[in-house]
Image (cartoon, rainbow, N blue to C red; front, side):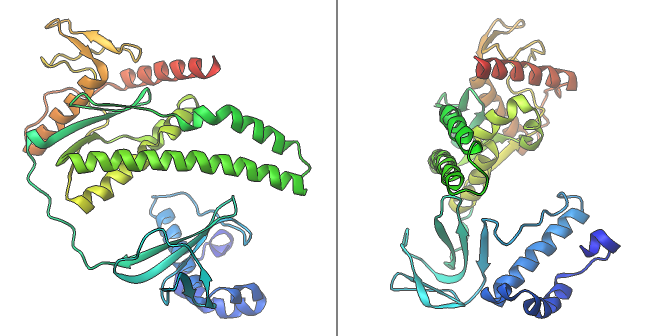
Length: 356
């Protein structure tokens, strides 16, 4: 409000000094321990810093009743299946998902729209990240992500796109329609909204399980993984592609690959998003006339018949290794007109499939 009203920038230390007076004005602030309030101010300060540096939009403020999470940065104790945190000295009964390894540092408590509480415990194990092995072509794999198939590897392995949201979209529409017809503020509307939340949670859990299993499999079986640097945030701006891309969750999959690679000492190589991986034949010829509907295409130079996705995976591996070795790739960047045309074709195909 200070920035919106008078363009005054307040640091988190200035805000921390105001918390004492705010507790007198807003008694419910005393229900939360002071350390958690300070973490919230730190998050606010980070959000404003990202906004001023152009890395994010203006922060969105949340009301007290908003379903979310809060962090407990210290004084977290787990004993006898009880979670002991400030303001809850008697302990909260919990069900441990796995045994804790290392020293407990902090906890994040979250509440889901379906009425479930979860606690994420951060532990310091004292272990150092493993040293990554040298990059060798024989232990390297290229991965091409897509919508038709979730991924295709340079070794010919194909993992289908499970399309969890699309498979449940009709049931989701029915539940949302029923909820919209209930009177606002009524108990029946709350029950109907909870049914919608339960289905959303099921879809999210299915997707997370699939992404974890797939990413872990790739990490454990390979020493070096080559991927494209996809601009997912820009791609979902196309309203005809947004649902399909969000359902396939390329961004979350890449995030999992990155942090699991650090855990297991696996190398990650990436190529530019404009590299023509699916248009470049083994002979080096580029087919700029290739359409998205062409799953197989014949090279005009050498006559070789290429399978689009498998070719892309092999080229991703080839381009990444060339970039890593310091040898400049001899491929030409894709023209913007070709990219726009490809996006239009894909939007048309997906829109046709959704509409029937």
